Image 1 (tube, each protein chain N blue to C red):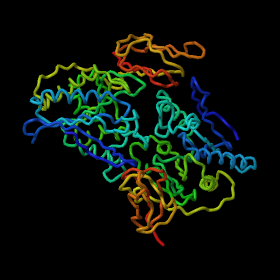
Image 2: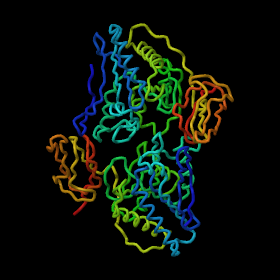
Image 3: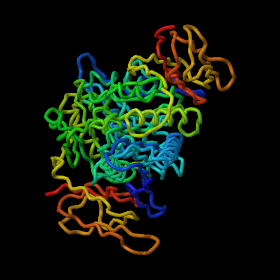
Image 4: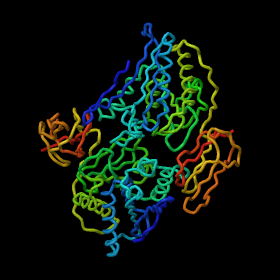
Length: 309
Length: 311
């Protein structure tokens, strides 16, 4: 059942409505468990659209296996997704810096408060993100160290390639995941692919993980997908490679490959002079899990990240 | 006056962006004034330019106190100013949400790190900035409630109001917050415009800064005493929300007195011109903030009011 969890009037004959699809089991729902899939906080991140679609499709294909409630929210920032805008249009604000919201605040504060309110009661929530348009990522779970102990068992079932635990910056306290974790809803943040794009293979991989989690929680009694054991890393094991100059970055290696110390992974070139301004070599070996996709760079722009061995 | 480059960003397709500082006097790093961090903060940059002009005259007349140094940085984001974009670069980083930055981070992080390194030792820090919500404010000095804030010092600007805001997590990335964290007495000054020049409030802002510098003993300057500021806590302001969306026809402005029940605005149906809502003052008070855009959405804040304290 598609329902609006909040609807706010816009100036010229339209409403900003956040909608969810609640899929219930054929049998009694009282006391059953609930999973929430949310996506589209950032309107330029579309990978979650496929995951929402594929999850709903598989559930509907075998409704007899469903023993709990599946809530799917493909677009928490519907105007942003419609315009491929990372931020909330007109406000130019990052929606994932507005949680937990305020039910008596302004329009977006009420929207974010309504989102939190509707997800509370879920036994788990999965917040689906893509990378932005600038770098490409392998499927990974991002965990705050504050909640790692509670979330790690679920994170390992997601079928992601990697779990990245990092220290909580204060600013992260305004995210949906942080708010829900504080309010007692275990919430995982999944990130993959690239902005403005969908990678079906990444999506299928994560959908398998979602069904593995649903099986574990008694929400799904169909065949249980086999999932891989992800690499688990902390900040100290990730090498950031940034551009030392401005120019145009030309990668010389495929994303999601293992590299050795000293490998050449790309060049930053000057299109006016026809010269190479910087050769980008690795300081350490490991899995190249992030690779720049947007070519124009300034000094300091991220080119790659390596999960070191 | 001594002009110097504080930080430079190189682009393959544009001339370098220099963050220019204008230094007056020599000696103790006494006061630093920072203007536009966003590309639409034109009023803020203009006010700084007028301060540079006035301080240069004062310096030429020997009116900068001995052993005191004042630095003015009219903009830290000229790239965005030149293309009328609020945020920086293709990633649209908000420079005033990128502090304290770091020297091995993204371009915006490197900029803010270099800037903060340069200005962290000043005793007083003044930033002209803007709020994310478009509209006009009563000119005021704003401070974060960090535990280090000093509202008594803020009174010395002589503006009508000093507003103390309890920081939320996103505020911890602002210059004001991080300046205070470095033990600089930091003040944010808001006037009633961003991308338009308002001469009246610009003159008021220039006068307020000069008054403050004089009272701190940094310049010799004849000025009026200004207001005895009223200190407000942001949480005590009354928000007036809309119940409908449409075209906003405001009838009162920042600084106006309103009485309970006065008509403050109408919201007009954009198709048939009928009045969808009439917004009435919920209390006696003074308009602290007024929405000024032509459009407004349901539950947006149309006005913020200061409760009337006395007749």
